[in-house]
Image (cartoon, rainbow, N blue to C red; front, side, top):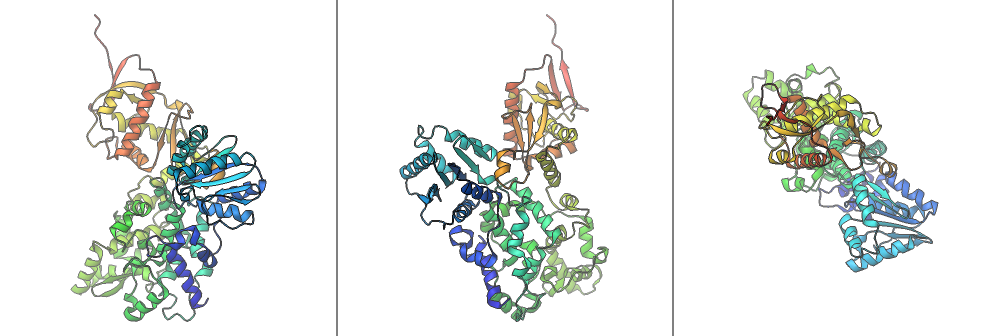
Length: 596
């Protein structure tokens, strides 16, 4: 590969990143130059589904709604390409070919009146033609509300699509593209290969930096490792249960992990790497420029990180901040790791100190055995640096590259992150997606909920539903033990099931990755509790500790809502019972009223 071509690859990744100054590649209208370098789009289930629809000539209206960056325009481009047409520049309702119409972006139509008219026309054409509409939810909803009689049935379909991921009636299908997951089995490897595959990163033959010195090439090489990909997939999967990681966000973060720069937000390029290496040698790049640091926003300002919900959630994982005695001991004595020694000249294994560059192994040796006080002080300063702690970087490196030594990804998550039950949730969600959850899974959930809501650490009595007034006057999940509360109802565990929210039509249309579960009463389509990662952590911690735990306001609001709906649908118990966690052994106390 020539130097010019290599520069093209780097520029392509820089333009994909939303953290740098140039963000053209993050938008479909400017993607052509990127695809000439990185290759054609990674196919998604949604683009394949719309392409099949285009060739079927089956009439109808398909509306894609979701946040910016979820890939709606990319699907529209794929739809046009299937018909042998280019994606139009105009956002309005246009005829692509005979019997095929497109609204590329409803929000690009200037006024509410004109948007409503375009939707009315689309609805009329859909009786005999195909119409594909891309629209953000807010714009779409306001347009539908502007003519309630004309769109009598669409708001209900939209609501169901937002709740379930996809919904349809006789003439219309609405897809909530926010439910698409970049970490799904069919998409994840393709996205990583899109920016890291070997033919993009063979290196420049005449580059003076050398094969082990180019941080961009080594970062891309690391992201081709199976263990690194598995650990990164876990982090992004779990994060997707807390925020909405669009394809744009995920690609941007992957690009930044390869070509990010801690000096400024413009990123690295070949010229910068050459100049800094020429001037500073091995001091030019160190572990701060490694993929495992850039993934956590090292070097980015607080304001920049705050604008990326995905990056913010990954930072909140605690990976790098959680201590583990064995992993920390490896830094002191690398001989404890029974593996082939790593290349000490690679930037991801170098730490910049006040006395020069040290490998992690050298830094640990200086702490343990050196009699040179300057080196010892420099190593300690690097370990405790509040901005770029060498200890935090070492733990992150261990999380991504030493998972097998730690006992697998599940053990690594429990030992090195705050998401202690993260992998258990993902495993349970995947089994629910296959319809394979068991009684033990259900008992964990019911017991944890009983502790959170009433302080009663038992599952034999079923799910305990407290009196609504008592529930809303208390603070479920607070660190203070709950006061005794009147039991409204006890629902046998056998009436509950666990299922995945992503099922049916949405699983047929979108790349989904099961990261949430639903606790459902009597297989109801309306009476269920959606358990997302933060709530699952609260439930499992409460179960494990048999006592109050910390909680988030949103989580507890969801619990109050679920229990209030349960109490409205369940008859009260025949006898008055009180859940009393203040006794030495928490119990349900039956109250006998005096006979008069």
